[in-house]
Image (cartoon, rainbow, N blue to C red):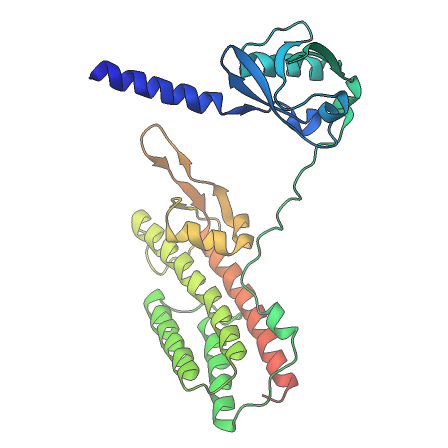
Length: 304
């Protein structure tokens, strides 16, 4: 029974291998191979490629590539790499029903441009820029306008530019209250959804600053620093790949400037990264105030 299982696994593995194409430098040659019983076979020839121009066809049995007689995909890959590195032609011998046919992919094969996907756009932090580029909404009722003014004032008071806020616990309490006000505002539909979403976007900066502040507080406790001693922007705190700090850095790419070391796998567990949470908090507040200024200026254009 055990021997039968082993044989079945071996046959399955062989079948999987035989269906796997060998595509060394396919972007330039246009050839995909597959392992077959007793050797290799042309599995695909890309239209307009060097292989297509040479006359290779899907189904051709591969006999020889330059001086090599490849019996496996690895053999073929080595022969192709040797030709590419030496800028040499690929002289290919294939077998068809009518006999053996010599073909050639010229040395110009290696001068063909390799198609590459354009790089993805760099990640961006949350922003109200797209919102404020649209026409300002119609004015909201006076009582709603007062609520918006109060929200903007309270947001600015959370992290005034001219002085440092007090304690993290007080900051967290005031931030939670602002979130509740915004959601109550949304539930009453006292303003267009875009306005509410804009306020939520601004709040994300202040939420992220809370994460950075908490990281600094943890570092303070670990180092047993007295509370009356201000934290240095150069102070580095550890963080791990699945931590709230890592998620915050990913959401706000400008915080990469505060990372001095990324987390990385170690022999036993993960080695922590290092970031500067006090510097990160200052950056988040500065960007958050900028986003708030954009939003309020947009609303003022419509007399909100």
